[in-house]
Image (cartoon, rainbow, N blue to C red; front, side, top):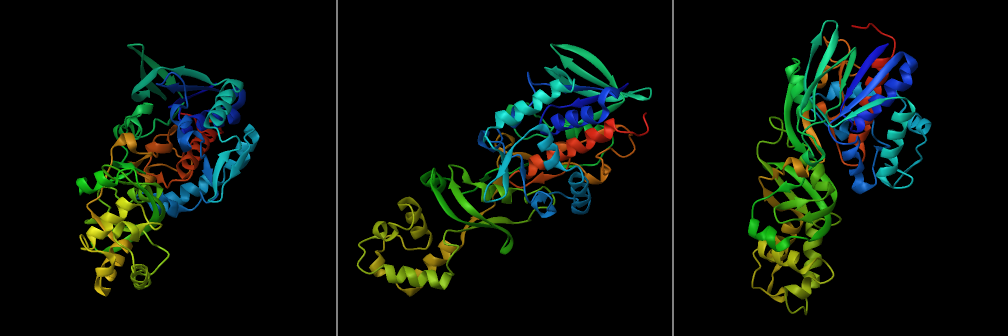
Length: 415
């Protein structure tokens, strides 16, 4: 009987375990090793507890961040051949898509999706070893040997196939610590530098950010390299005590990878994306007549604190709207259309939704098997692939895990 070890009980590990058990039937013994008291801890918190588990556009390579776009496209095609929607349907999941193509369980409960996966582990006879921390991976003859620590004691587990689904460094509160990519490096793999991905961004001007903390506004944010625009995202912008947040900002954080991000990063905030700058200046000038001060000017447009900051940034502090000339309105419109924040920096791992960087995608084959090591697989967040917000990361996690699990349990040369 073929022994298969799944290291990690997150999304990719759960999919790998179920896929292997479904494919191998009675010819495989699948064991899931997880350091938390139960698998699926991080999965329970995804999508604000609603679990945005996929996206209708999940096959589009442009929605992911990696140093290896060509390899990514090939691996997304491999995942596409697994028919994830059909797999979910077979498990009994009923999903629904929102207006942006994000897929959620019909119940909108991450606990329901997680519970469904755990029930399938039991139904398929997958053994669980929880409270076990993986410390090393090596070879024992023609098999793999995995050293784990449980209750202060070291144990050695042997297997014919091993799927590493240990995650990256994002969300240390869920038990992650970057061990998966580090393990890949110790196995001889080329690892891209890790960085917090899908995270808010720290900005300078701390006194300004303190005054704006808690404000939200619709708009667009552009990532610049110096003055050259690189990417633009629209949505709700959140002002925090340390900088900027919101999905549109977090999407841009994925482009700040070490060594391949912009040399002189900056953000430009557009609070009126539906109007051209000249048009906005004209609207401001027309609005100014008879208004006693900046507070009245911003009423119905933007929050007063935000308006005050823009008024000052345009050099209009101390001036009443009636005293502003055409040049002043152009200056204000310019700030509203391109409020600049220089040198944005990534927040830490605790605020990151996923890990950027990891094992280079060229190091694995179409089934996520580590090249040169038959029977060893790396999936999910251990790899250099981070998806955009909206279900792309879980598509990658579930898809890579399922692909690897089916491969590990399917016909093929054993070690």
